[in-house]
Image (cartoon, rainbow, N blue to C red; front, side):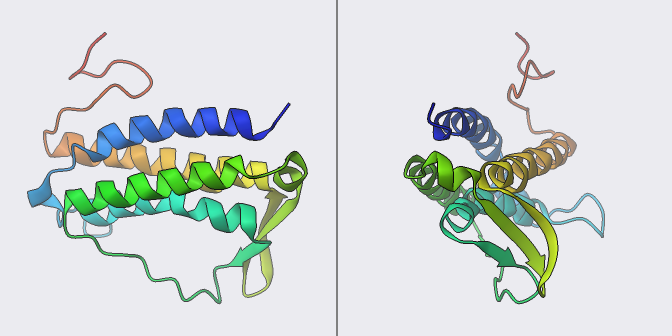
Length: 165
């Protein structure tokens, strides 16, 4: 069995659901925050769009050190840019997973902070935790942000008050 196949199926399902939510982000509310300690709606949506872009680094690299990274999160100013980034990152993520062997997916990958190990898992586990679970967590936050803005929510794992069965 090719281990990439179930990963790709799960990614496809979750990315389609995520895109439906991102499509509903109101352009005029990108700066809105539910609380002063919260990310803005635009920053949260952009973070969600960035997450699939991490897959290439997971499958092609040996690890990532957050303490020495010079990564600066992007700031997008339109929903169109947000969807374009999400679509590109989703496509690149699927391409990266497709080219992996089972051995590569089972090989260890390490997340560190200035050399201190935070997490070490097989790449397949990292895709599930740092990509899919992380994305789903923030997608849940986004659904609350959108509800607070009276934006109708799409079906996610079942009906919503806005889209019953």
